[in-house]
Image 1 (cartoon, rainbow over the protein chains, first blue to last red):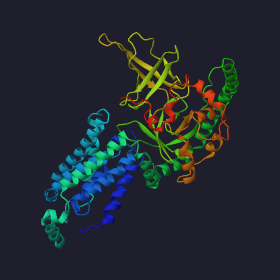
Image 2 (image 1 turned 45 degrees about the vertical axis):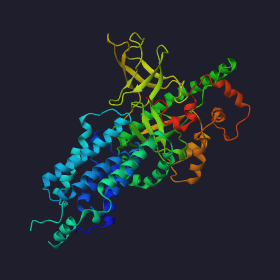
Image 3 (image 1 turned 180 degrees about the vertical axis):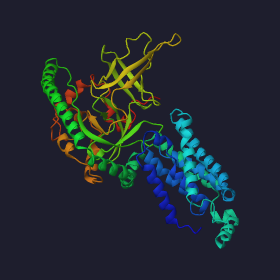
Image 4 (image 1 turned 60 degrees about the vertical axis):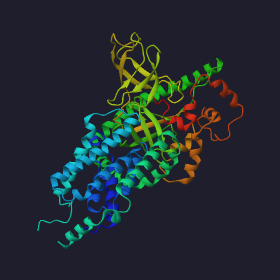
Length: 159
Length: 367
């Protein structure tokens, strides 16, 4: 189960990336969770040897390309976020579901804060609290995936 | 169960040997890389072509992502009712008739205008050339107001081209990819547009407000002659937008005792966020419009890309060539036109905006 194939990781990242490419608009765009980051966090928990900061940085570049913003801002945000995820990875897999959820929320907010910092430096103004809604929807999506049977921590030890 | 133990073993392996460079080292390395990229991208123009090439790789993924909504649209269209189609047809026919009449007048007026300008030895107004684009999707960054349309440098779209719809200006092309281009809407914070009040000819510059879909007219004195309901049109002095297109309507004016400036809020006339088709109007005409209008999307046609990236830097001679709309040889302009260009300069003080794609990217960026 935990012998994750590299192809699986890349395929899931590709699917997440296509989710980002979907024609979102209006409110949906404001609510759109960061699919790619969620998948990266998932793989960092599950297979830290195969998905690491470098992977996150690389996929971040593609997200940058898709969003059309300044090159490197998503890459930086993902790098910082995955760093936090990686240093707490060992503790994280032992967390209960709720604890994990809080942690994922924190990670998503870290990513958004990094992005916000970069954007404010490059001259955007602050969008207000709605800016952080994608983190919330991201956590909801995470919880939905867990409820649907995605094992986010490790092979089950319930038995 | 066995898997779990194995997993635990893996967890307790000495971190540094199992995982290569420490997370901190990786963080430092990749952060530095990202920061360098950001600096290069925002301050230097090296990454433009890299971005363009990578966009080609992204194209098939984009197609996959767009497929569901396209499918939905096409089935929707297929099942549209007979009655609705008839209604629409009738409406369009009526509209075509009305427009045909005004077009006839327009032709005569254009001729008259040209003659009068010749008589006065005045500069000819620039001929514009336009093509229809379809909005592929809204920009993915909720921070900015951008749309992506399905015409790119393969279809002779150049940076800086104005984008309009049936009712007015909606934005400007700020980045071109081979098969698509990015349009910044006039409500974006980084876009400004030179306007004129239709009623009294007062010139000003409208700034996008950014957050809600409005425009601001800053730096105008509190006693300025602008009333609620005044229409703003493009002044055409920037050489980017054709003259006389509707831009916005003034909806609110506030003056306060503590500020020397009036606070003027305008609402765009064009349907900024509710149209599927837009018209891309470039004043500089890179190629003969005859074969451009026929060009459908040919993605990844290397020949056309090579041909069309060159004219994105139209020199003065090409601007003059644009006066003749069906000129098949823009590459070999008549030498005599060179001096016409020299006295054209005063009328268009900023045609340089088009001539340099790098500045055309953010021609009116406010710093």
